[in-house]
Amino acid sequence: GENVEQHPSTLSVQEGDSAVIKCTYSDSASNYFPWYKQELGKGPQLIIDIRSNVGEKKDQRIAVTLNKTAKHFSLHITETQPEDSAVYFCAASRRGGADGLTFGKGTHLIIQP
Amino acid sequence: NAGVTQTPKFQVLKTGQSMTLQCAQDMNHEYMSWYRQDPGMGLRLIHYSVGAGITDQGEVPNGYNVSRSTTEDFPLRLLSAAPSQTSVYFCASSSKGQGQAFFGQGTRLTVV
Image 1 (spheres, rainbow over the protein chains, first blue to last red):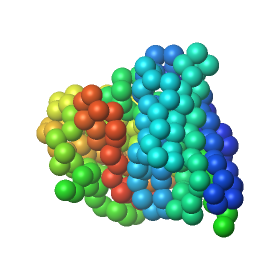
Image 2 (image 1 turned 180 degrees about the horizontal axis):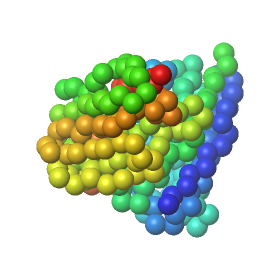
Image 3 (image 1 turned 90 degrees about the vertical axis):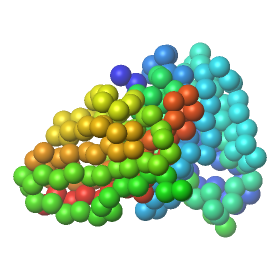
Image 4 (image 1 turned 120 degrees about the horizontal axis):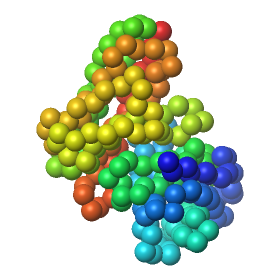
C-alpha cells in the first residue's frame, strides 16, 4: 500500500519568515495530495490540495508543489503569522480521496514572535 | 450547516465492552471514512465507504466493524474493546469528484 513520509517533525521559524514542509510518497498511482492543518482539540482542516496533473498551486500565502517523477510534494507558507502555529499533515490518495487518505505523521509548526 | 457530526466527544470503556461511535454528515457526500489518531502516528485509515451499502477496509481494520445503510450515517463499531484501541477517532466525508475531505471534531476514546 501507499506510504507517506513527512519531514521535519517539528519546525520553528521566526514570525514573518517562510516555512517549508516536505513529503514523499511511494505509490506512483497516487493522484491527489491534500494538506491539512490541525489545531489542538480539533479535527484536521484542508488548507490546500493538488492533483497529479498540476505541478504547483498557490492560495495567498500558501503554495504546494508536486514533483511526480521524484514522488514528492511540499507545502510552502510565506510571511508566517502566529495563527499559523499548528500541526500540519500531508496525505495522498489513488482515487482522488474515494478510498480514503494515507497521511504523513505530521509537522508541528511553531511561529516564534 | 452542521457538516460532519461525531458523537460522543468523550468515552471511557472497560476492556471487553462494545460500543458504537456515531458519524453523520448533512452535505450529501458519497464518500465517508474513519481514522484513528495516535501520538506520533498521524491519522490511519480504519474503514471507508464510497456509497450506501459499500464498505471496505483501510490500513488498520482489525477490531472494528462498519456499515453504511444510508448516505448520511457511517457508524463505527468496536466489538470487544481493548486498551490498544485507546485513541482519538475521526470521521470524514467528501464529495465524489471534489476530493476535499471534511472532518468531524473527533471522539476521544479511553479503554481501561
